[in-house]
Length: 100
Length: 100
Image 1 (spheres, each protein chain N blue to C red):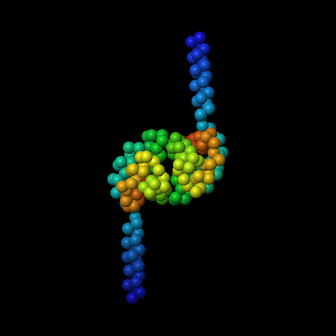
Image 2 (image 1 turned 90 degrees about the vertical axis):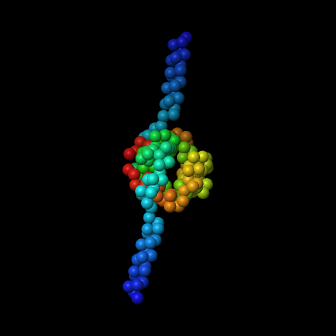
Image 3 (image 1 turned 180 degrees about the horizontal axis):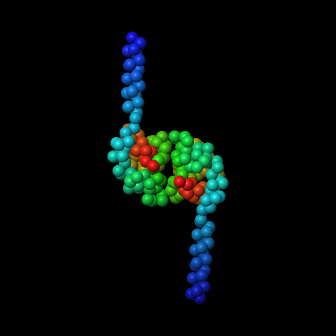
């Protein structure tokens, strides 16, 4: 019985990890639209727009969610974040965080 | 007379440039308090806090002014930005933008 519980716990933990794991390749595909302002490789060519390459993943997730919820506002970013799912946000953030 | 006008114009242009030029050394001195969250060299050790090293100067100025004016809010950053003068904001932003 103890072993069954341990295996079940391990499976649940594994599932939870995989369900939350960001997909960098999917994030790269979804990030194409970001490149217009933030640069194709996450280095902006426009002084007013931030570089995203190598930025902290958790910070990017927080900001995209803030733009989506309206706690942080910007005419462009509010509209960009609106259609993103939590998975999109996780993937795009993981992609930019992975760049150097 | 033409020479006087030219020299006067040059002096005014020079003054205007110097009045607006950010002072990276002053920014470095003023940035000591930023390092607790954003890292001494602008690379944060805390996932939720952004890296600032090499970030766009104009973006940093815009965000610090947004935190100061309240158009962007954050419990920590709103308090940090409040006492900063425009010159402080320019200097600190120039300092972090200068880091690699």
